[in-house]
Length: 128
Image (cartoon, rainbow, N blue to C red; front, side, top):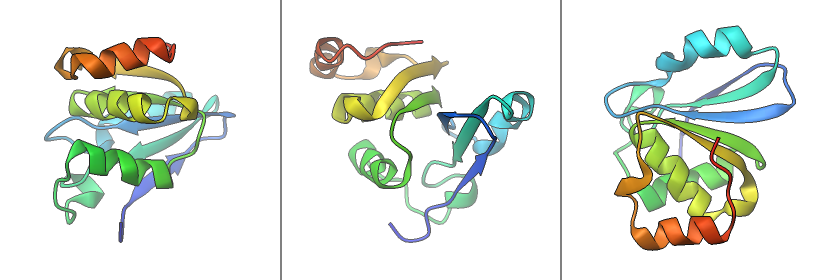
């Protein structure tokens, strides 16, 4: 994908990927990032159609996860708010070997197909 933007902040050894919710942008995370950037390395993403990526047309969730696979570090904790949590869960179901864990904020995996939920349990992905 051409011109996909994100911000990386922090000095820690643990990568944390932050995904905003619908109608928001990456600025929602700055309070947390400012408090914890000495302990973690944050990769702060604006989903397509929002924030720095507002020029990108909103993509289907499969397309978003494919883009993130190419740009984001492997072995990261994925933290998603609202729709960002659904993207994190979808990513985990497709690439379980690339994540350390998932944190959902105001997001529910109940919107994900039951088959995906079964696959997640089979692959033993921890929920934090």
